[in-house]
Amino acid sequence: MERAEKREFVTELNEVFKASGSVVVAHYAGATVAQMNDFRSKMRAAGGTIKVAKNRLAKIALQGTDAEGISDLFTGQTLIAYSTDPITAPKVVVDFAKGNDKIVVLGGAMGTTTLNPEGVKSLATLPSLDELRAKLLGMIQTPATRIAGVVAAPASQLARVFSAYAKKDEAA
Image (cartoon, rainbow, N blue to C red; front, top):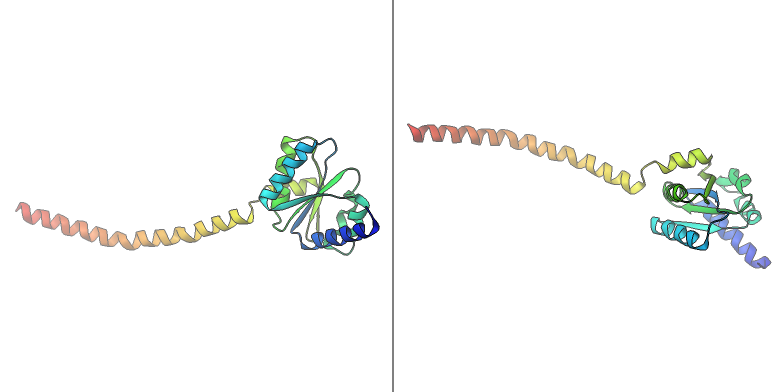
């Protein structure tokens, strides 16, 4: 990499650290190219991105961002997974690491909060933003359905009473 390319990469990575909802740092030593391509495609499908960065450049890019506390995680062969949704990157990384022992979660950051590996795993267990929206919508719709049932119940009971009187009159 030439000096201009390095500057451009650091600037781009700095913007990523500032704009991301969460950043996960992991080791990938021993992972094959096919495994990494599979990992990248799963992350891309979920709405996140994976980058392999030089540790020194990543540490420089972290300066002046909220995630500056994770700079000590950049040792060895590290990759950076990030997404605008704070749950997406941790969820995909932890799920992929379960099936692949070559991916080892080192930690991460969510805003100004520095996360250890357990913090990243607990963040991965939370529902995503879309799942939360679906649950909230379901909770909003349920009372409306119940109200409609309660309002309709007296009318149906009256109809049954009238029907019973009508049958009684017909029989007499």
